[in-house]
Image (cartoon, rainbow, N blue to C red; front, side, top):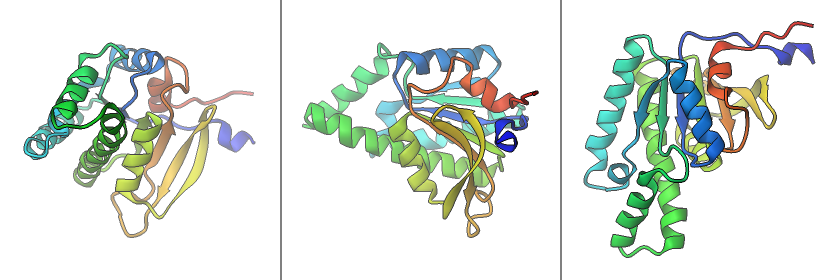
Length: 203
């Protein structure tokens, strides 16, 4: 269907990557090279109940500041599997007495929820047309926190990750916002930049 094949670009996007895959690292690096403003999320602080309020406030302010200067923003929790934040986060959770399994499952879920709260706060303060979520668990947790009434497919973006639109009549700051939800292994290296620039297909 030709109507789904192409979509317009937007001035700026908020991208959030919660995947440690090597493809995600390439996608983050390509976005940063294309001019996205990169923010490395302090995952240890976000998972610490006493530090999380201040840490989230700092991330939100960084994003809003970068966006007010015209940048698209790339928030990331890891740049590849060797990112030291992964081992630091697991160490911090082990120090609480959590097992490896619990740290990966519950830690990942809690991190996704807190990233969702950060995303909600940003969208409430700065209306955006397009949001890009990468990492299967991150995408689902953030979407649960945003709690739209529904999602409709808006366009083809990459295999298995269409560009959708939030339906949220009770949340004007969310209603109509376009969102791409993708697993860490989906898309090519240019995924984030394509999602920002649009992809008018001729033919």
